[in-house]
Image 1 (spheres, rainbow, N blue to C red):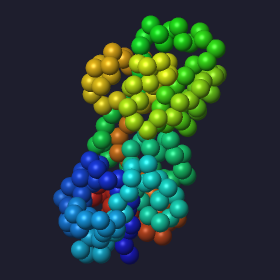
Image 2: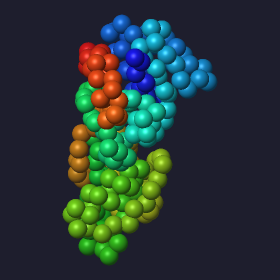
Image 3: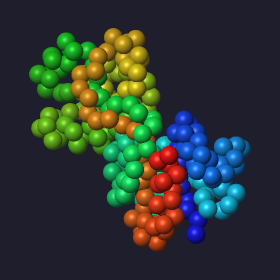
Image 4: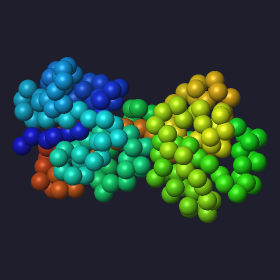
Length: 206
């Protein structure tokens, strides 16, 4: 019985394929798919769906994919009822609040506290738990620009090296949680394809 795995196109996919190939799977068709979005291991044991990172939890939740590999930030933002079975240890970074420390202290006393982010659900949940009303400004890219031009007071975003923040005179004000690639599984698939998914976990944890 084959397992369908949703893999985020880009750097994460390369590491996933490296690990699976080290375990004996053939990922050649998935590495060079051309315009195809679905590829199979030569043995037929694995079927790959190549999707955008933010879409991985959606495909797994709806059962179109049995399993998926996505960053912890994506999983927190999507908040889908999936089983997170393994921290794969790669794609490491941090989810942080960043901004100008002096402006931040002043902004906290203002009537409107503005947070620019790609993660509105995470931001809303975080600040609700703190009892801090906020205005969320949703951006898709170059989030660091928002506080520089007065669009927001802070940003909530993932930080890898911190070089972009430093280049724009922004500091990490708070680290929310570590982020890395995780293997998630559809609950029904875990029951019906238990052994196959266990084999997938062993392969990815090499």
